[in-house]
Image (cartoon, rainbow, N blue to C red; front, side):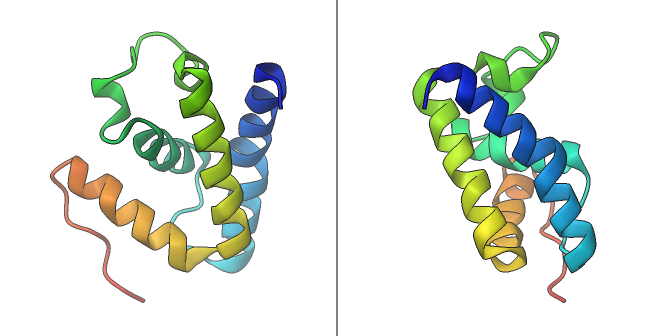
Length: 105
């Protein structure tokens, strides 16, 4: 995929498809900004705002090509695997922020 295609796919997944699927399936998170946090954190290996400029929007456009491809791949995995994978990723994202993971269902 070209960079433009990856950026478009990221938007489709994080801003549309994942939140819709999450609301329908009652996943652990369902807001687009939560998916953004989780996917960006894992793309950079920690809190995204420690690596990317939080004042420059959108943050995902600041990812290098490798990070962007990894972010899209991860979002596709979440779409395919659903809440169990999302819970794992969310828990790690919260740990990076010094927050406890959400309780198991």
